[in-house]
Length: 303
Image 1 (spheres, rainbow, N blue to C red):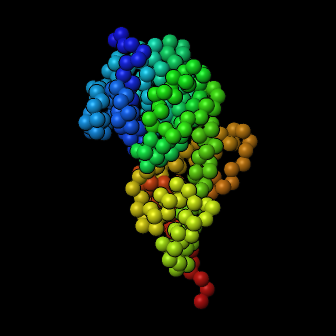
Image 2 (cartoon, rainbow, N blue to C red):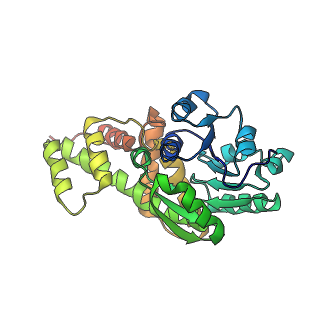
Image 3 (cartoon, rainbow, N blue to C red):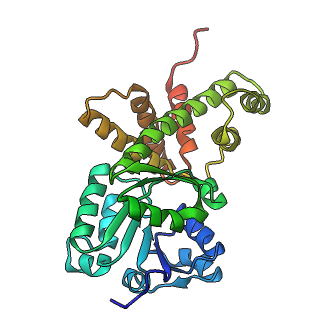
């Protein structure tokens, strides 16, 4: 492993829907970056912004002592870090590893223990928000880890976030993210159902959107998602299959704690149906398609 000073470049691995705009905001803020993505073309905007594009993940860890990962799914995260192989310790030793994706708290705690055993440090920093907040540097990071490590990560992530909240030890940041996503998943499904109701009742949807925006339920979510729902424009900001996976993860945590989640369970079923309809990599607002399909499968009103 190369001898990299602690104030050297920051590594960034995972340049997908969320990772690419996050990394671009770091580069534009003057952070010296070395980046890598499994799909190489996703790294080209970072190269244009002045980042070093690594040939592989080993080069990222060779060049940077702090490495931020935005990787969707525990299996992908483990594979990229070579967890369970001798390569894992070679990567993470003497590094601060920061995971910004939404995985289970139990996985995060186990990964933190493995990183510590290998001589590294670990902070979870799942971010709340979708592509548009990521592009605007307006995400909310929910931080879990050692207080000194968390303080260090705050400085690294500052250009990507409008707020960073200390949630406690490892696992607490991710549990907080799951709690927030109960509200998000249910709200998105409810908003889609409201648009569907207004549409099928023959209401003017521009006026419907104005009514939402003028009332106490107006939010960044409604201002972004209502136009997408009205236009059936499902360009991805937060993917439906990710919303479905997240809802199932929340439900599993709830069952383990003996908690009921009736609204989340209903929303999860709709996200699953939307995935089955072919909207896996569309925006989660495509949950509207599942609601429309249920209506269209129902017999018509009595004549």
